[in-house]
Amino acid sequence: MIPAPFDYVAPSTVDEAVRALADAGEDAKVLAGGQSLLPVLRMRLAAPTTVVDLGKIGELKGVRDEGDAVVIGAMTTHYDVQRDPLVHDHALLLARATDTVADPQVRHRGTFGGSLAHADPAGDLLAPALALDAEMVIQGTGGRRTVSAAEFFQDFFTTSLAPEDILVEARVPKHTGWTAHYEKFNRVAQAWSMVAVAATVRAEGGTIAEARIGLTNMASIPVRATAVEQALVGRSADAETIRAAAEHAAEGTSPTVDGNADVEYRQHLAKVLTGRAVEAAMAG
Amino acid sequence: MRITVTVDGTSYTDDVEPRTLLVHHLREKLGKTGTVVGCDTSNCGACTVHLNGQSVKSCSVLAVQADGGEVTTVEGLARDGQLHPVQQAFRDNHALQCGFCTPGMIMQSIDLLADNPNPDEEAVREGLEGNLCRCTGYQNIVRAVRDAAGHMRPGAGPEAEQVAGGERTTTGVGGDS
Ligand SMILES: Cc1cc2nc3c(=O)[nH]c(=O)nc-3n(C[C@H](O)[C@H](O)[C@H](O)COP(=O)(O)OP(=O)(O)OC[C@H]3O[C@@H](n4cnc5c(N)ncnc54)[C@H](O)[C@@H]3O)c2cc1C
Ligand code: FES
Ligand code: FES
Picture 1 (tube, rainbow over the protein chains, first blue to last red):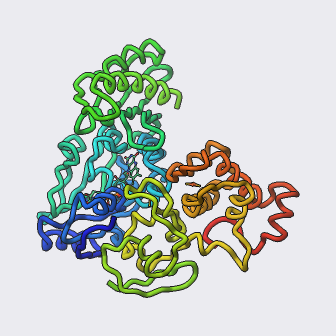
Picture 2: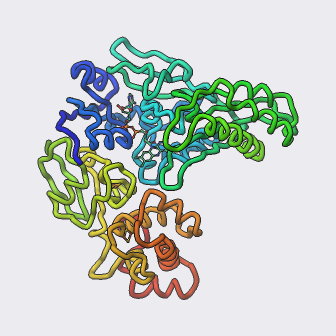
Picture 3: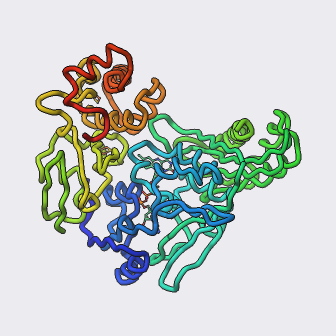
């Protein structure tokens, strides 16, 4: 199928893009990599009157070092995030999670910012962004503002972005020297996570000094598994510690039911996958 | 909207509606029907082409997004009547039955070999994750890609070198030549 007709603009700066969105009103849509939006338009699940393409805005692409944070431009593709040395050194969890997103063709087009803005509860980059305490830099008609990942994700496919807002970049506090793993459970022919666990840890000797755990698809928004984190920190990273900590993984979750899994099964998966994720993260 | 796209080495300037998908532009405007549409959900990869040197699903890119860009389709691979080594390997290894997935499989295989010139079986399967085949069970496709890797890799042993240095030189090595 082909999308319904729309007007198309491709501004070259963020300021112009915000203005184009404001001028076009509620029925405008931002186009990033198009890997979620174009399928939606093809299926005619949406029919915006104007599409504002961010593809020509150079300032939205790339990763830079800003002292205590790594700043990832919204239009940086999954492919580039996977290979970025700054991401590897300071936010390894994001690289690991991005490795599991979709397939090579989709990763060539799909963007980091597009995934966060789309806010699919099964999206793989939301839980890592939450676990790493990322902050979202947003530009709207009133200028720029910064919101925490916890405030940014609000509900199924819903963020704190207003219709005329653009997600400019994410500031990810450096987690230098942390090891990480993203453990994902999905059907083979579909990369979408049924449940996944994002784990990153900092070890001192054999002891877990710090841990951050995020859960994918265990609620309408990504969930931070704080009880698991607390049960890990300060303990030696042995099998018993990990097993006991992982038992807390389903606390505070409210997963949805779909054709793949019910609540009980998803909560079971969360525990099993948390154990695997922490073990693999500890192994480096 | 007026766009200019270089497809298989030829520059084309056309007026397109913004909603036109790249695959429809290729097929319907430029007659490049070698690139096919297999689904409505961006899942099957049959429509895979290279855009500015990277594999993309051309059903999931607007033609206007390709403005100023360079596209290679399966029709642009052969050189002087010689199949590209990956095309030849698909033929030699019986890597197709109905052939519907083949244009996308070949384009994605070339992309994967450009990233990893010597992939093991698992790397081939992961590299072709976004391409579905309803006929072959993938075995011969994986075999073909690894066979092509042998022919395309420089210094991969005398036999491969001979082939690479012999009749298939005109087809180039990897990438979007
Ligand atoms: C076959 C297939 C499999 C996939 N599998 C996975 C998977 O396993 N895991 C996963 O996480 N994802 C998966 N995806 C989705 C993929 O990661 C997309 O890249 C991502 O969801 C959206 O990014 P995009 O850049 O393509 O955004 P678009 O599709 O261009 O946009 C998505 C939405 O976000 C809005 N938006 C985008 N960028 C901005 C911005 N900067 N500011 C404000 N709003 C913005 C758009 O208006 C739109 O509503 C898959 C997609 C496909 C087609
Ligand atoms: S037609 Fe493009 S992915 Fe199926
Ligand atoms: S050969 Fe028929 S779909 Fe692959």
